[in-house]
Amino acid sequence: MGETGQGLEPARVAEVLVWRPGGRPGRRGSGYRVGETCVLTAAHVVADPVESIRVRFDADLPEEWSADARVVLLSEAADIALLELGYVPAARLGAVSSPRYAAVPDADVVLPFTAVGFPRFKLRQDIPRPPLDDASSVQYRDSCHLSGTVSVLSNRREGTLELAVVAPPADVEPERSPWEGMSGAVVWSEGAVIGVVSAHHRADGLGRLAARRVERWYDTLSPVELDLMARHAGLPPRESLGAPGATHQVTSLAGLPDNLPLRDLMLLVDVLMTLPTLRAPGGMSFVLDSISSVIAANSPRDSRLRFDLIGVVRTCLRYPGTLDQFLEAVRLLEGPSTEVERVNTVTDQLARQHG
Image 1: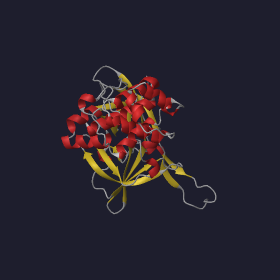
Image 2 (image 1 turned 30 degrees about the vertical axis):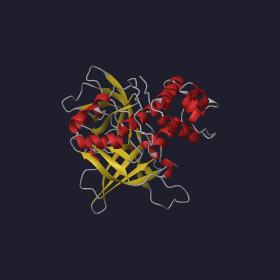
Image 3 (image 1 turned 60 degrees about the horizontal axis):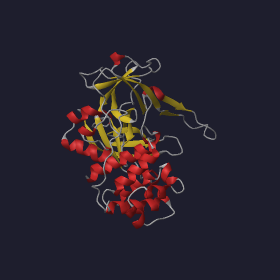
Image 4 (image 1 turned 90 degrees about the horizontal axis):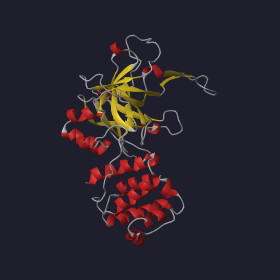
């Protein structure tokens, strides 16, 4: 089974760098940007005592950026934490929708999964290039793209997912796990988040990791913490949690206010701009002709797609139910796609925020 939906985006994978009091290096971990300003990681990576936290994206690539972060949620019981970024480059703002979350069925099934993190065995020695031959070499950790299977009925008492992976090279540091630094990596199955890597149990061997299950968060987090996860990470109510690869249940936006805040309006507009149907010549007119004529008659049209969409969405908000018509027409014309899944994720997020 292949992954469907929005799924894992490399540019949102985070390295979490922690400094202890006195500027001493602390733990390293992994994470994932689950909203415009928030990163999801494991709680034990950023647990006290901590002096500062730095989060880095796309290290040593042309798009590299980093930011200081602070902890806004830390649950040791669930072993998850949310970090709020102190700075996001302008080019990285907008259309950062939350991922889809899913519950793994408690059944005799084996599911595929993927995850990206920065474990210790990926430690590399950077060799300086001319004209910096006299400079000191620098150690860094490269990314590790894991793929494997989840044996769902393992680790039931602990309440974790057992991730079966290809074992890293021989354990050359018996006192340390080669998987150090992988904690906090978000685990994906068929386009949905199903857990967060939390531990490597040495007795399980080098080819097994443990991850905290999304569905267990609801039993562990307090109502305040669940609200924070909903607002900052897009975690849906328990009853809305589907299974990996499940068909998306369309969310109505009929309850959105007609004065939707500009930030939320642009979040929807930006994901709509990625749809091939609307980007094609005449695509917008074709969609408008298939829904209520009042929208085409009252929308200020513009040759620039972004401004055209702003006008159409604002007009739809003034006529309850027509935004749902517009989105349904787009879904029918597009069919299943990554772009449509992004639209679905944003509509879910807006409905939760303004429902």
